[in-house]
Image (cartoon, rainbow, N blue to C red):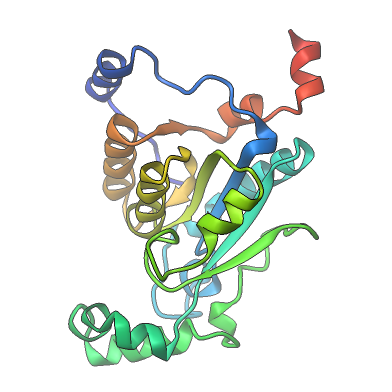
Length: 234
């Protein structure tokens, strides 16, 4: 798991900008946990096209967050990147210019539905009522990527918690777009994984400073308590 290093300068800037570090207590029943790209291709070494070495280490925290939010009445969404030929046609710049032909072909194979590398990592604990959303771009919210926004709005979701991999790629892209679509958005400092600690922490600093909130799994355990438990504690 990455060592989180936000830095006092970022904390000071957040306080100056907002006057507080974190959102006030969010309503769990109006909250969705987004688990981004925790597929074998990214999490399991040697399984697919792009392994993120720290991704497996965040699985226990993702499972804990999912368990807590289910108990509090929230929604769990497993977001999986899925390659399609249609996407290759309408996002040709990404597929044809930002990868070598060999790497692009390997990615397409690994992230095609039905390939073992496309599957969610088997240590993740899915619930019977959880949602699975397939996305085709880095951001799950950008036009044409998925129906995630509609699914959340239909369920009255106002808050999203972003976990998964990679922190600075699909997680950050999804989190930034969530904020700009008016969802109150939190990235989890110890339930996201990047290719390096520098990339991980740079994203957390930028996101917390300008886009939303950053909290740890332990902090969110208090935020996501069921209403009756919160009332009893008060």
